[in-house]
Length: 255
Ligand SMILES: NC(=O)c1ccc[n+]([C@@H]2O[C@H](COP(=O)([O-])OP(=O)(O)OC[C@H]3O[C@@H](n4cnc5c(N)ncnc54)[C@H](O)[C@@H]3O)[C@@H](O)[C@H]2O)c1
Image 1: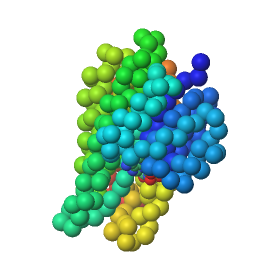
Image 2: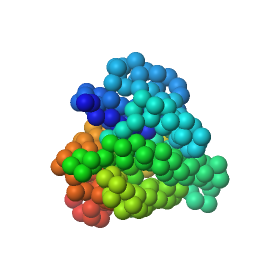
Image 3: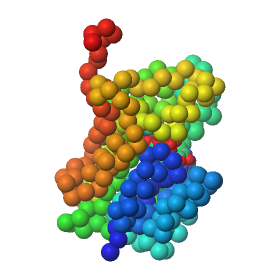
Image 4: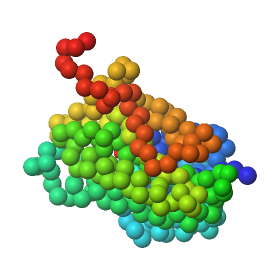
């Protein structure tokens, strides 16, 4: 029988690449994202293994309704991948309250709401020899925050803490929870920052010693590992996927 996953933030960037990877591997995937042309386009492209589910993950009633609708056809979920997130930049002394609140409500509240709603479905799929999986998208910002991204860094630190506590609470239920901490990934989220009115001084998270920026596929490879049997004893971690960006300080002029 086909494995089943729910992916939030499915319409763009890392979430979109994860949808495409899992559908190609024969999974049945429900994709939650804000309603709009990007989600419609993905639905048209991804084929019958994909079910679009328009939903604002920050809204408790919408999340509950989406997972109820999902449970009606898919009562057991092998995996939840929480990619929905927003980046708002700005200095701490200047950031508008509404922007701070949006970052927190999508990145933290939305991640928790989706995980909580998915829990009964994940528990339904979990078997001792095949635990269900949750992968949360944290960020390098949780491990090494940077200026002009304080709210985002705080939200991702919270995601990593949610990961640790959910992992400890849910492992006995057969559900393994982990998070990823990518460095800068070439996605629409980061590309939007090139507009100075949006970016407000935003800079990438530093240069990877690997010598290139990450692509969404670099992150999806590690998601796929966390979904695989090879990760059957991995829980409660935030795994950097940053090409070594924050491994060591490289003083200017040392190369
Ligand atoms: N791109 C990076 O450099 C980078 C680095 C580290 C972590 N991340 C994290 O990875 C995740 C995916 O980022 P991405 O780069 O693919 O971004 P993206 O902007 O390309 O995709 C994010 C998706 O989330 C959706 N979304 C936003 N708010 C939502 C809401 N309220 N309800 C439902 N969906 C919503 C957007 O519509 C979009 O489709 C995010 O959590 C992000 O914080 C990204």
